[in-house]
Image (cartoon, rainbow, N blue to C red; front, top):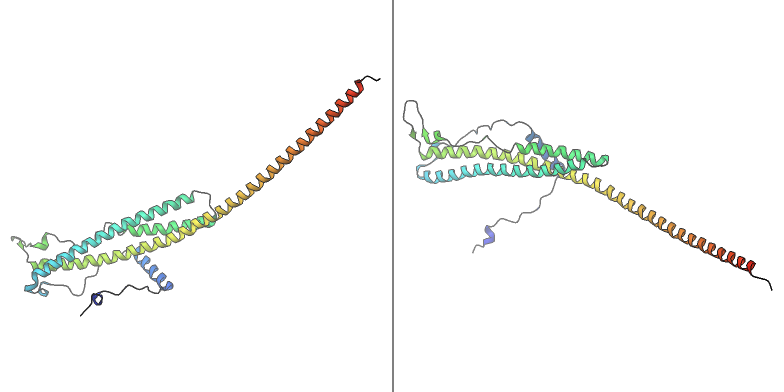
Length: 262
């Protein structure tokens, strides 16, 4: 008997990372995302009414309607992801700009400027994924046949199914390209985070070291001052004791002089 595990996918394994190839692909993707894009090229072949058998009309219509809805929802989902990505990019950029306002070393400043530049590019690319206008949507002419000087006639399910399928394919092509653009923006965000982290580290580590040195110097100064105060107190006390001793001796001498002789 067949077991359930025979029908399940194998667990996903890790893949080897080829860093030079990965960097090359990322740069190509970023370059593609920054340049203007042409209108999608029409496919060599298209689904026609003749492709649909009469017995499958209802099934094809329902399936094509679902595929069309999925293509529209996918584009909407990508737009939403792009907006969220812009929020993250803006937040990190704001922190870096705040860092630039502080007294920072030259290395930290350079890394922060590189990070901001990368994040601005990511932000610009993300903007291309919002408000996508290049989509195919069914309109009234997909459901009615308009001819001059004639009453509009409703089209059959075959024609509407074909319109839905071809529009879906067009929209999915736009969605695939938008996915690549969004991936480029995420890649730039990743590089931006790396440079931002390095920037913060070069700011925090020297400051921490400086604070430790300052504390050590302060403690050493306080210790010297405390020892100095103790020494001074002892010297003053000894000096006062000497004065008291001298006053006592002077008093004895005066007493001996005034004392009558027998």
